[in-house]
Image (tube, rainbow, N blue to C red; front, side, top):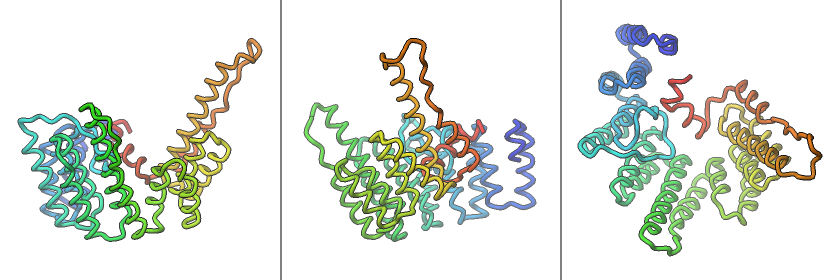
Length: 344
């Protein structure tokens, strides 16, 4: 069915998936069937297949995710897959249908969390829904915070949930700042304290989490980043997320040789982690752009002399393609978008 879809034989793919559901209807067959209809814009048919799949496999979390996202009125369904869970953005809602759709989406997540309380992705999606709904309604983030607190109670020592809560507080702080600026208030916003308090608690509970330590490095004040990096490397010297965070610091300081050394270390430690490849590639692209600008403004060069920068980014790109990474927070968010699926 996958081959038929990729070659544009949608009807044939539907027939094959229908036969598969009848003969060996596994949870993944129902998910692929619903995904095909979603890709074709047949959202109601997709939801029918989601519901049918859930009646047969009530413990399969991905079907609840898909149902919740299809019904979500705060984002464009044609752009996001059931696995996209980060950086919740908001699109305008149709006020005539938004309340019903929002409630329908909530119901999928609520049922899913009851059936699959250990599904971290489901907790994240449910919290993102409440965050977007609060932003649309210009209300506080109480529901999103409560969901993440409950998630941490049911799934202790989980760094992903801690990071989600910390990022929520940062986004809430940024939204408050924008609101104050639009109202003509220019008072300093110190509301990042909740994020700092959560980070301290998170590092107490998960002191050896590369995800938390790398997040701590990136968002610490600039004067503290060096000491935070040294502390993280001492704790977990071979964690690719920490190594990549350190590489980015060197890249931001334009210390190209050191940045390359640390990026190389990150991609060698875990070539399956796509985020390291992405940051490495972005760094090399930035260095090449800077080299071009520098050569254009250098008036000391003799007329006709051309300084062509070495395109190291292409080598990084080729190595990434060969490694074929399958994991990574940012990597998966991009690779799993519906738009990306339809162009692969």
